[in-house]
Length: 314
Image (cartoon, rainbow, N blue to C red; front, side):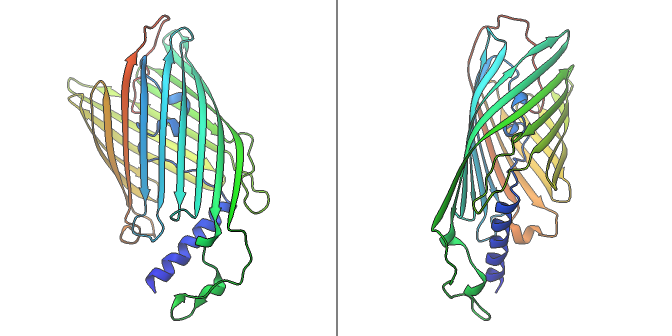
């Protein structure tokens, strides 16, 4: 009976996600920053490859799995960054699969000791739904659960594609960072059954770094609002001996997030776990696991005055 309830719950969540689309957001600000705001990426002239994977609510029969790959490069003649990003979101073991591929450009603008970096991102997205994996009310037998075939008529799969535009910006001054972003500014139609416009997502990112001899302490806050959904994450990251990262943060009314990682000049890896504190309960969801990696490659020669935006989001 518990499994039947879980299946029915997940079906409701999947159907509601079609009606009110909500973007997946990673818990780690350092390695998932490109999905928060493309203006946050880059603090030196090195090329960077990033990999992220999130496994949400593994105790449910149909968990959420989100993965992303990104690459960006500093362009010295323009004093700017350009890159690409790919994200895949799998809901309900392939019931709904979303893919998004984007290109972005971020321009460094030096105003005395202040760095201002506006950014533009253009993306192409697709959504596919497999109706054969959904459960309907007429399939329920009161004692045995979902055992009957549905009498509903539907297409086996439904597919939708769309073009999207995102804007971002960042201000940086003496280890203080303020980022702001607006996703889906044209509200693209993502409806699989009729018209359903993707709501605009507004974001705000704050960070500050305090450096000691062998320790750096970085408090941070990032906020997202998409229609009636709000997410506020606040925490602190501590870098020990320039190599070991430990972090503790909290997402409002949802989860306590712990993180540990290692970094050097060429490589960074982080693991985080979200402990569910909401009424869903961690014993039911199993929390969420997230792994992020970043690799730095060649550096190019800087030709113009360069301000390094060193922060938790770098």
